[in-house]
Length: 158
Figure 1: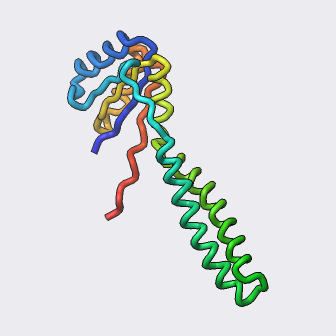
Figure 2: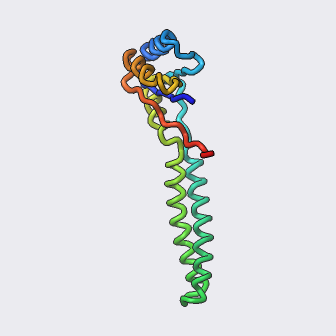
Figure 3: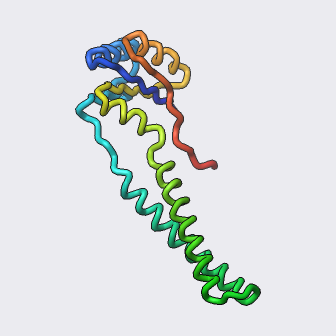
């Protein structure tokens, strides 16, 4: 299993020189990538926000109504109590759904996408763990203003 290092460059020619330096140091070309400023795609987070809000509102609203109906036999208020608790649950679920959907939406990638949109060039290299420091140093020596390994996505245990 390898580790991915991402590096940002102000100048495209420095990024291309870094790719050549990595090749000279015998890093595999198939494990390297470059994203130029014009290649950036700004993602739309509106859809995931909508799904989060609707899902949270419906889920928590139903739970709130069920709790309200359960309490209506114990606490006076009947269907009105169930409605109020359901509305409160829906509002809470909508906010929770929005926050969760946005936190899941490509957390770390957003920083790098913003940098590429701003005109920087992004270089990625996948390296064996014992060569991460070497790859990072090559990227910095070639003009990267930032070069860091990124955390792999969570894997299933087992």
